[in-house]
Amino acid sequence: MRSIRRRLLFGLLITLVVALLLAGIAIFRQSRTEANALFDFQLQQMALSLPAEPFSSVPGAHNDAGGLVIQIWSRNGVELYYSHPSTPLPPRAELGFTTVQTPEGDWRVYAALVGDNVVQLAQPMVIRDSLAVSMAVRTLLPLVVAMPVLALLVWIVVGRGLQPLRRVTKALDTRAPGALDALPEVGLPDEVRPLVRALNSLLGRLDASLAQQKAFVADAAHELRTPLAALQLQVQLLDRAHTDAERAEAMRDLRDGVRRASHMVAQLLTLARQEPDATRAAAAFVEVPLAPLLGEVVAHHAALAVARGIDLGLDAPDALAAVSRVRGDANALHTLFGNLVDNALKYTPRGGHVDVRLVAATPAPVVEIEDTGPGIAPAERERVFDRFFRGGAASLDGAASGQTVQADTALHDDADAPRAQGSGLGLAIVRNIAQAHGAHVELFDARNAHGLRVRVSFGGATSAPPPAL
Image (cartoon, rainbow, N blue to C red; front, top):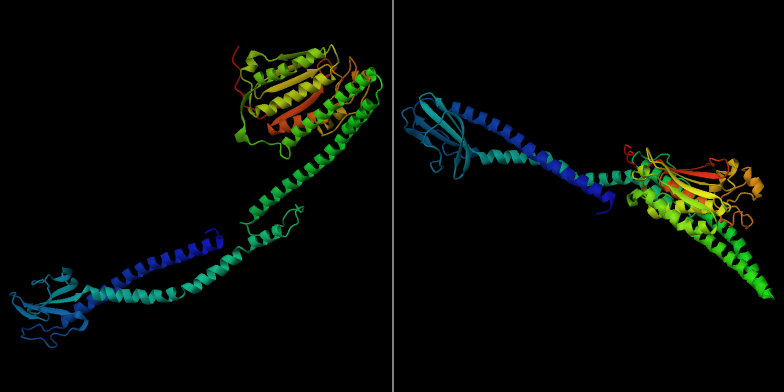
């Protein structure tokens, strides 16, 4: 039974039936008590109305009215009268009221001294119980007859109570697929309003997610146009090459273009996996030691750092490494730190250095990646986390003064300058993963005022206190 209306109707009717049964039992007991009191009084009065002198017969003998049985003895115990000798009652009287059990059922017996005689009157209890049942039935009969009417009224009342849910259902059914505006809450009962608020919250998140997806698709389509156009141009140049040198140069340019396009597609796929909601389910997170993970990231980029003539190192003191743990997704955290290290290597000139440091463990782990590249202008440090954002290119002289954007900036490729053209997605991916892990990413000037320092603080991390040294 999945219908709330039917459940309520069934539950209320069962409750009414149980209430009627309990009321019937209570009324029967009360009626039997009152009937016993009435019949006991009647027996007492009839006993007192019998003759007090000796006699040989009683007027109205063998009168079966009310099933009454009369027995009379003299004070010497001689039976003077027995209206129903076949009734198995005690041959001796016990003064007062008693209830006697016989093979024919229970009897209510009253015995008293009346003059020189002992009088005993008995009446079957079944007569009293029948009267009590009759009184209870007459009392409950109107309610039993009214049960169908009560069921109809309950059906109508429950239907009216569920009407707000029908209105909400109808409002959702008649909506266009793209209509994600909030449902009205005016006039809704207190029980329905939380449901509508939850629906409105879900609609709001869906609206934001769809808007984000639309913007992502539009930006991705726009950004992919440039590398595809460049690839087409490089293919044309390769076709037009007349000498081996021209053909080799065109092939090298085509290979670089394919690599850049592949990198952008890979970044797009990584970012798409983080959308629309970057928050991972906490139940799926596990405890991840940071020091081994940072070591894997540095080892993964070591060959690239050697090829570019950059000193890449990891500083993770044993005291911090032993207690620096976060709850999260190890693969996602590897992507986060990998993007930051890759970004630092991409824009650090030959002869520079990139340092990965584990700088704190309590109250939460803190990791810093510092390089000696051109840095990022303070005015653009927030915008670099936006998707497809690229700062304006500048010469290395301008970079030295801190007026260029390091992250994902397109600069010329020479021996001492940043070598790659970014996709504008690396730091957006970093931000999404950090938000999913309750971490905060901040950008600062390098300690030597030349370069960039990225700090990742895990505010929600779980870390044990460092051991005493």
